[in-house]
Length: 275
Image (cartoon, rainbow, N blue to C red; front, side, top):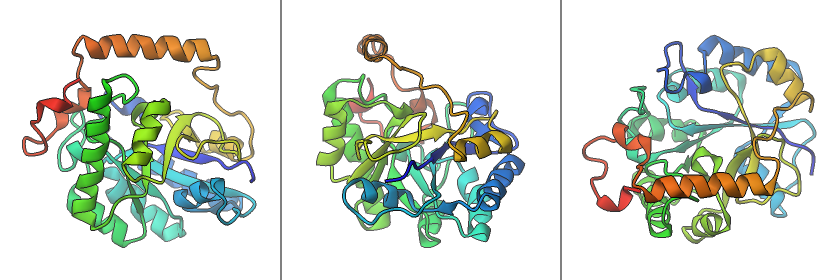
């Protein structure tokens, strides 16, 4: 399997809230990224095809690249999707189901169910990103399992079939979380890790490169050429374990996901979703 850059976007907006601004790109910036992909002669593939290649499916073409969006900001439908459609580029959006039709903690508009259904009708892959964006490896297991299942069920109810793909909220997972995702019926999952995907990737924590407000077209071109890749945030296992222990301690002290602030009143009032 070739080294495959899988790009992880979040918001596409000219006016993101300060809460997501660092992880947001402007419409002009995103358009420049699309042109860069085409100008470099890369071959866009579906994120599901990357996962399939990791499990014995058809090999990917040389120069493959994949595009994903996490959370489900409204700009995916209103800005990114038309640009991608014009360029013939497939993509996937991994939806935080509890905030569909609501707002992010910063007040950014999120996708509605009608927009999600329209994206799927126009070729977007629709996957899960948890129900309330919990750090699934840090909250109690019963909460993590319930959150994953609730996300699956909501997508299945609205789209008529179980989603295949999942993206771990915050990119965080551990062995138990990955097992729960598989047991819920998802067939693959994306993490982050800020490196290109290779044949050694676990199909339930596939590597991606996080695109931020500071990712210009030149930097993206370097990434696509396998150069100037961002540093991996936790290069040592002891740091990973220490950071997870800290996050678990916060969760046990009752710190809920900040995404609960953006949940529509009708989405869920079930106390099982408070960490």
